[in-house]
Image 1 (tube, rainbow, N blue to C red):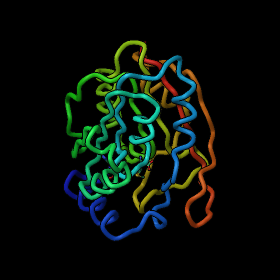
Image 2 (cartoon, protein in one colour):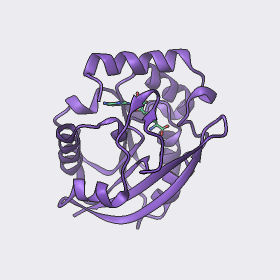
Image 3 (cartoon, rainbow, N blue to C red):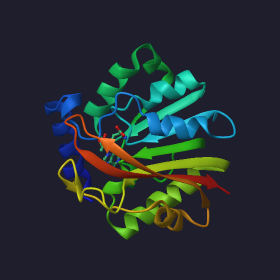
Length: 206
Ligand SMILES: C[S@@+](CC[C@H](N)C(=O)[O-])C[C@H]1O[C@@H](n2cnc3c(N)ncnc32)[C@H](O)[C@@H]1O
């Protein structure tokens, strides 16, 4: 993945220059993530959305009954948009402006969510560190819900190279701390009508 300062500048520029309808990953409602969260044995008490800055997920998780919701994103501009989207719920959400690759601890969560952030980590070493941080942060019996481009998805996202992968390959990267509970192939349609193949992996923390 692009280095720390360059990545920060890239995402700041994106969120300052583009409207929601110009963001390929934009979802008015994060339907698939919510469907998988609703299918969990119970509503998690705590959740973190990694790379979730402008997403509507945090507010939706609060409405589902998750008591503690955190959103992490390296772009302050993304976080500002996320706060605006969450409206009055924004004050109940913990907003963390940080590069996930530079953290060694995040606290404990029952649910870790990442849609289209991990896929920018293209190097084995940074993916291993990410998986170790997730293992350290998700409590036993908790879940990691990871979504990114499937092997037949685009090679780039927001102009940056991504690692396309399957739920099974993700599960292997997150083993032995996590096991694969569910895999879901999803066709996301961009705001301008282009189909993108995503794969969602629901992993359980042992
Ligand atoms: C493709 S967008 C997906 C946004 C959101 N998860 C969604 O599904 O709508 C990727 C997001 O990850 C953030 N991001 C990219 N690299 C990151 C990193 N290393 N650490 C934290 N956030 C990162 C970007 O700022 C951006 O908001």
